Length: 113
Length: 112
Image (cartoon, rainbow over all chains, first blue to last red; front, side, top):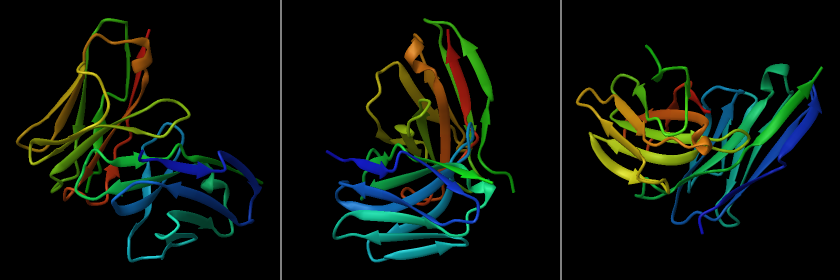
């Protein structure tokens, strides 16, 4: 069964600290993996997208890694800011099948001053 | 350049009614996908349309239907609404079939 599991479910850190969010997937055949940031009540915004051959991608203070062998990805946030408070969603797509776009349940990140 | 737009922003309906949600993709994008996001959960895929043809359908009942118009805008229709249909309905557009998707702000549907 195609699944995307994220951990932790929620996380609270102090402003300025770093954190790492995890994503494990069983989607096959793998096409790409995306990380989205979703503010409460808003649509998700794309942070990174990685294909099978890419194992790291950065977008400012966000760095995503991908290990296609172990089917794991992580999103590392450096020097967190209050505006980083949001849900972070891992999305995995299977090749040539629109119905196999699987969303994780997200990690709810709260940054405290 | 405008992003993905959705209307209405919020909607309140009662059980048994039907609803039509609308989405306009980013200019030049030919693919539109619809998702349902229940509070506290990740989005669930409902439909994808590419070049006005249905390219994929998620695990939703036949009460859910959609279409894409010649200008690539799209409508999602839900008939015989149930309380469990209350959710944020997200529309996403992309240039190509499996390209990065850009999400709209969503329509918050409440069924009473």
